Length: 288
Image (cartoon, rainbow, N blue to C red; front, side):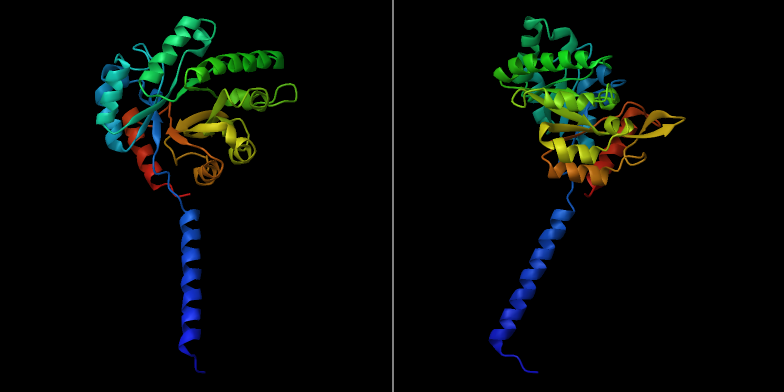
């Protein structure tokens, strides 16, 4: 069978276009988390003794974002906002968020304003409530939602975002409702966002990927940590050595607008820094 030059060019052009489409599809199907961070509570046993030294080591491991917490030296680790911003710029890291003493500051305007101002000057974007404990009734969850709306409006007016970080208890049914879903439905998206702990939602028996498909637009940050259950108890492990299917969950999170992927670990097979090194290597290789 003979083929003229015009037909040949048409066929080869179609093949090239098809190959390009397949290549683009493959590229989309296999993404990596190019930038990932760390909740500094993961290294709470060593960080206070040498904040700059420990943060520098973490940066060398590949962490490019930090989320802080309220230690004895404050969430800026004894540095002024300008000092910590300059230091982190020097090691190519951005502190994007911090957990803060929401419970102690929600009704103390001066203290809340101080935290907001410090975070803003240091270049952070988020102030997060880290823990409120299980509530006994849905009325208590309602009061929590009301408090989040009130504080969230204050934080928002000062140029930052306010959010809530879950544990397993907010995903355990109470009076026929899932408290986390109640919070999502009864907080103003303009003033309250959420940080999803992907370990604790799964440990509570919920499906993280399905939750993200439904509520993903409300979550801007997530915690990545792994666990196994031993005699019914949650025991944290290095990422990839537990039961959480991060390939599937992170892919779903990316599809639904997740902005920040932050490693966190509170129990370690050997030492905190060794686990952080293992976790960084896992995140670099994670293809979703």
